Length: 388
Image 1 (cartoon, rainbow, N blue to C red):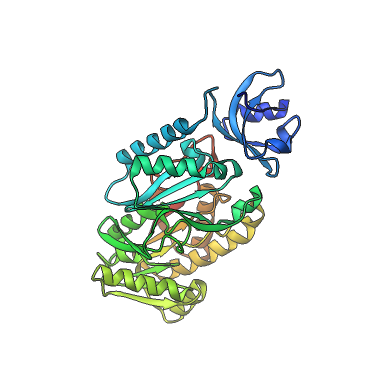
Image 2 (cartoon, rainbow, N blue to C red):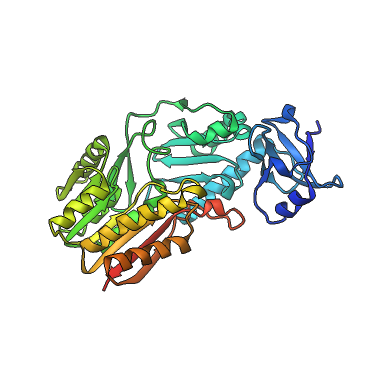
């Protein structure tokens, strides 16, 4: 059967040529609510085929491109896309059995996240069209990966913009209360149904591992959550202090430390900014400080306030570092560019009256691919500085 079609405006056609996989509602000649949740053909204003896409009249992002070829988008199509994702991860993921299998638009799978935790899968379907074919995706994953369980962590607030409810559900099998996974030289436990995001922060995996080479003497992990940076730091530091405002997260950190036989991590429950201030008054000094805060800039209007927050925590960390010590500082705010983040670090250095050498610029791992036509996929920044 022929699928519905929608025409794009001239302005929309100019935007389409950038290769960005989203088309906004304002760039359509007219909308049709009856097509919402289905796959449509996108046409130029002369009626020529441009792409196939998920359509949702309720969303500002009306169309999410699936394919630039006029091919059938059926169960075999989605299985092929997922199979390609799996083959790519076989080539790029090392020393871990917890990683991302599908990274939404950057893998040609609009609004679909699939994360692997050992034998268990956690997925998110974040737009109406992808949510409607959730069962097809699960069947393909079962066939390709033979997982013990598949859960949907659709408790993301993003779904409300698509007219979808936030919910968690078991789609296949029976997930354990916690599952043990490996990341480099450490093991940790994941609560797939209740942990952050899809269970854990997989986008920092390679940065967690990299922290081991900078850790020595006294090291400090800020916004520690369940301690992945701390665990890796403890492999080479004499002692690690982990700071987080969540008591339950720190209890999980202690459980992960015990799992690895690590006893040199001390936890501090409290706000990071206040803890850094108290450490400064106590004239503590550290050889490595890791700053991995939540996204301060969740929209462009937040950038000014976020910049002040980033300057404050980096300034205080810089004051606590020994000469020759390292600062590993991160931002997961897409709305804050790398250039803006570097300016923030320069401002923090100026306020702290310190000087620093840039050692590394790090990003998200290859299982979280960056599609250059889709800048939203390029969000994680990790800068390593040496105090001189």
